[in-house]
Image 1 (spheres, helix red, strand yellow):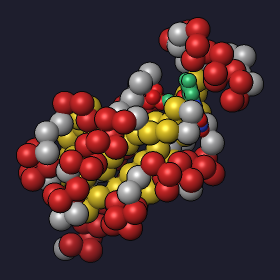
Image 2 (image 1 turned 45 degrees about the horizontal axis):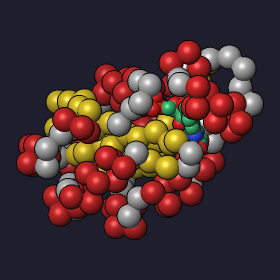
Image 3 (image 1 turned 60 degrees about the vertical axis):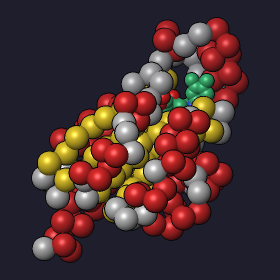
Image 4 (image 1 turned 180 degrees about the vertical axis):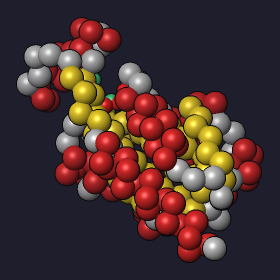
Length: 164
Ligand SMILES: Cc1cc2nc3c(=O)[nH]c(=O)nc-3n(C[C@H](O)[C@H](O)[C@H](O)COP(=O)(O)O)c2cc1C
C-alpha cells in the first residue's frame, strides 16, 4: 500500500502530526506540504490523507482549492482527513462540514482530530490577540493527541488487511 500524507501547517503542528502518523503506517508512506503537491502526483498512491489546521473556524484556502481541483482523482482513491485545532468537538464536526465538500466527507474512510499546539512566540500581534480571545491562553503549550494518532494509524493499517 502506498500512502501520501498531504498537510497544510502554519506553525508546524499539523506537519508534526502528519510525520508521527507516517511513522506508524505500514507500507510506503510519503509526507508532503500541500503547497508542493501536484494533482498528477496523486496517481502514484493508493491512499491520500489530508491534514489541515483551523484558523478562526476555517481551513486554509490552499487546502480547499487543492481538494476542489483534485476532486476527480481523489474520488478514485481511499481518502482520509485529520484536523489540528483547539476545539476537538468542532474539529470532528462543524469544522469538517463547513470547510469540506460533501463528496469528500462521504468518501473519507477516516476523519480524525489529532490535537493542537499554541506557539505564542511564533505568532504576530494580531494572531496573539485573536487566539487569546478564542482560548484565553497565557502561555504556549502542546496538546498533540498521541492516542488519536495511534488510532488513526491503526485504522489506516486496517485498510491494508481488507485489501489483502
Ligand atoms: C490566530 C489563530 C486562530 C485560531 N483559531 C482557531 C479556531 O477558530 N478554532 C480552533 O479550534 N482552533 C483555532 N486555533 C488553534 C490552531 O488550530 C492550532 O494552534 C493548530 O495546532 C495550528 O496548527 P498548525 O501549526 O499546523 O497550523 C487558532 C490558532 C491561531 C494562532
